[in-house]
Length: 318
Ligand code: TXA
Ligand code: MG
Image (cartoon, rainbow, N blue to C red; front, side, top):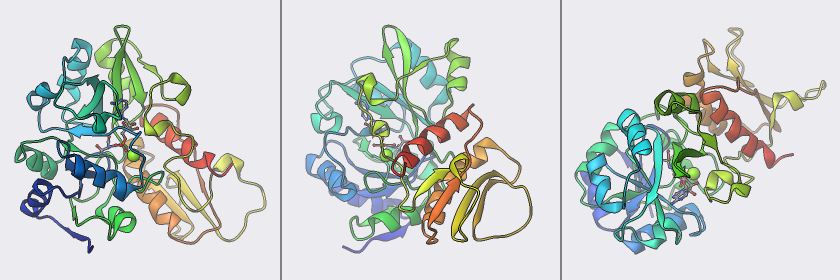
């Protein structure tokens, strides 16, 4: 199958209605989308990604009203977050209605829903009469794509079309939230920081993003978001360095242009660094280094999300 890339919404719509999978842009990362009500179409997502069906998928909607038939209720604490942050990089775990197939939820009674903030994909969703199931459009365990070319690189010849919406604005997956004992819980750190959630909630939500917390999300598996090239935090860098090492640095410290160094932000802006992080990993992974070193981020705001992803990415090489 030849994979083409373009900005043809009509073509994407025709493919999706026909039970095909399509790479779609969102503000977080690119998704691999299919008609969530068509079991054969959804199975193609798992197949193209090489992902086990035990891992549930997020449903994407154009509006809060569109979500209503697919969930039993929307607790008021989560609805308050939705008012402020939707469309945007936040996903809600809610009790599912019978309209949601168990293939989507991996057999669970709750479903993950979100409203992505990207003009092309919102327009696409408005023109479809079914929600799109979409995981990140990477091969299982790999780095999420933040540009159409990243999707092409990982899924070429596995999917018919990638809708090119440019570079993702947030650059990190959505923050996943749900309810437990009347409290909002964060199951995956993401594009909305826990500090921003706190401003709305009035309390700092507990983060339960490890396997031992008993709720399954793929971000929890020990090795994830990993490069092919061994990746380490800078702190683990020995004094002797080989000449074939790459470095990913938070803030530009000089104007020397070197193929070995990738600066995530000229000014040390955490949101800009987040936007560029996955592109840096994809890019540096392709340069044939023996090792790549990356700086830890200040442990606040999106820095927490990035450190979380990098902890899981580097775990593979410890
Ligand atoms: O930003 C995002 O959320 C992107 C874009 C494409 O929307 N999507 C994304 O999907 O990151 P994925 O499949 O790569 O990660 C979704 C996470 C997985 O860890 C999955 O286990 C979890 O959400 N999840 C999905 N449905 C769930 C459910 N019903 N209960 C608990 N976790 C769920
Ligand atoms: Mg993913």
